[in-house]
Image (cartoon, rainbow, N blue to C red; front, side, top):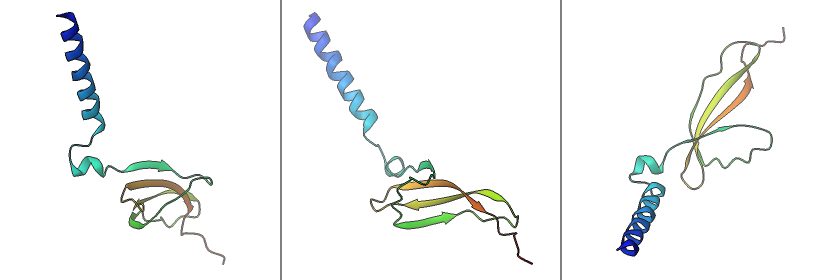
Length: 89
């Protein structure tokens, strides 16, 4: 009896573990991964979906780009950019 119970629990745990790993719908398969850009970040950008607007200030500001890689996975990339408010004259 104990052997059957242990086998049943093992099977149930294995099934639950697989269920946790497997996506259940299209939305969960396409969940965006949020990344912080560094100079060593290797980018695989196949399609840009959106980019944040850059404010009219003369300083470094945060920016964000949402894109799909060559495998169709969505990513959100946070990075820094110089604002559009600087002028030379």
